[in-house]
Length: 293
Image (tube, rainbow, N blue to C red):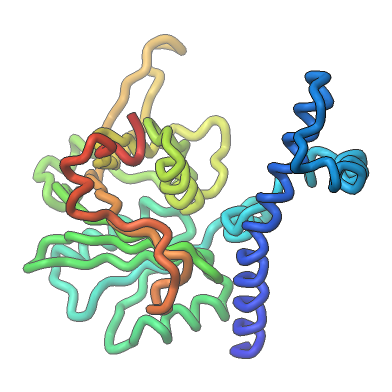
């Protein structure tokens, strides 16, 4: 198993290293296509390669015309089977953190909760790979308050690091009858305002934690981005007065996420390449809104 994982990882890194060459070749073919469609002369720097490139263009179809990226490879098998998630915590979790993770287990369908004990991250990741888990979610705390969540996609990554703010669990709400029970049906997802390239990347990481729901399910989970703070809300709806009368009811928990790092690897790989990380000067720059408008 260990040799197989090393071989698969090496193949994945090799494919990722070819991306730059494939992107360069794609740009050359795109320029030739545009010149032919618009009736313009072929750019002078491409005239020596024109015959070979035109032959490649003729052989391409919709699937091969646009080069694949390592992002496609990471989630290539996501549509073949439902996600299988392992939920765990930092060591010696407090009662509020344990309660929050219990609620997250119902939020994420097909999730399994594991008591961390004395296990190290490398052991957890290796066990999850062997048992075909698709994601590992690790929740941190500071003095009994959940303050961080790490989402690591298996087997190759990526790993997204989020800060957790304003956590309100169902357990904190005194009126239990008002919030009712939490259904376990697969939810519909609403991903709002993830319009930039990094926003789309973040939305991809979040949406692949959930399986495809049935059309008639009445459970809705919302990730709404505003000023780079992603609000998580959990609702169910009822059509009590007919199809045009919809009653929306929040059932919790609720919290805000703040993305601060994405790594191209799993969380046990300290040498993994950093795809994006927040920097102090980003807070005051004009490009502050990194996930969406």
